Image (cartoon, protein in one colour):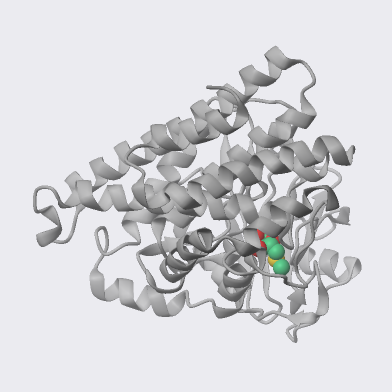
Length: 403
Ligand code: SR1
Ligand code: MG
């Protein structure tokens, strides 16, 4: 079964049965295709007797969300499996374990995380994850530091840049985040009730200048190996555990893009809560929890990154007093701008988020969408001037009427 083709359910079971050291030869295996993302097939395989289960994720040669008219390289499966294994080596316990990778079938076999929930869903239901900020702050600091010129052999890093070149998936981001929302693109879709707000994104040249600078950073700043799509749909959680999945968009880019993805999706959920939690006191309390999480994610990232720099920096000249502070300020400013851009694209672009899309009443949804756009736009516009995480929080607080 080595030639590429999309597996049927029966073939997926047969494949799983042959995997070494996972299931008994006579195991009674059941299979479900559970892929609800935009790009791949995801098979959940379970042994009825032992209840042992695995996930087999297979890339298809096109963007599933659009169809075969949007071809996509299967190389993303290799990139994802290699990024997962690299992330596990840097952050054991924070990513699913990869059991096997089949290059011909563009298939990764990995740990099943069904005892976790997708964070986007958990937050939308009003659940809190007290250890999340610590876990993801550490994930960000360790993956971004140890894959950068600060934390690894700089010749090996150049090899990594080559190994993780990911043109098809980067092009999706370049179009969907840094172009489409600011023009009349056929990829866009949005609630007709926010036509005026969508139109103003297309005509604001001050905004376009900032987006052009963010796009330039995404295109050219090969700082670290990014996850590349670190939204709350790429994170599984329980109260005690956090697991980062789906790094198929991994490539060498600016650190702030990954941090901004996390913050943007916390703030998208904050905006969504205006239409999800009818009780005002409960809603405000939850929105404050989300803002506290934004602060904690950045603080843990900054503290951990600083400690790694002090203890493991491989670059003599980078240890010059003052350089680290300048570097981290740049990462913070990038983070602010990318946070904003990632919010805007989820309201007017191709792929929306269920936090907001799940609000049935279009009028109520429009209020959440307008709030997300207001926060996103403000962060894009002020990103280059931001001095501290508190300014990012204050921007969201003011727009949401929480100040
Ligand atoms: C065509 S893929 C649309 C989006 O889904 C992924 O999760 C990425 O965010 C991408 O932009
Ligand atoms: Mg994904």
